[in-house]
Length: 240
Image (cartoon, rainbow, N blue to C red; front, side):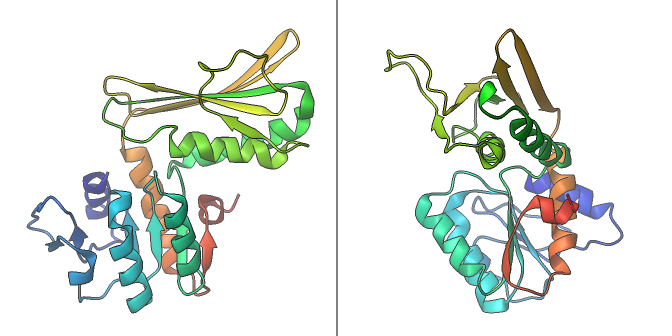
């Protein structure tokens, strides 16, 4: 993902990469790469992260100390880390999204509209598929879509990610999330609204990481122009 962002940025006249961060000691002849964000002492308009939750502390330190806006494309954060992001957003602008794809974020808006229109009459199930190297499950995108549906439903939803140990009918308030891991699947997400004798399915498929990199650069351009601290989303960047 980081390499995809760098390649797209190299072809964008409005973007210049000041530096990179990589804990596995990668090198580049186009810009310096540091093992730790705290080592960077240059200037930049915005930080874009698409790495691992383990680097969050260094990124928040850099954003806070240098007052640099921060785009977080990484998923799998703990509850404590999400609280730290929320606290930091009181000082600097931070945009966090479980998926940077423009299509996925449009899908989330569609999910809200469908959930609001259907209400209690349809069960909501989400199926997400990713490559066999993805560490977290369910995916951040699946949770983003579940949140979108839950925000529009007339009841408090319960996210259910495993049913193997249950012997009971599906509760009306559940949002089921199923995860598939295999091969080189970049990312597929289906949101199923299942009613009596009819089913509505909304689906998004990503065929390369470029779709996420395009969204990350759009988010970076948006956040670089934001002056007010706060926690922003891709909906803000897209104006939807």
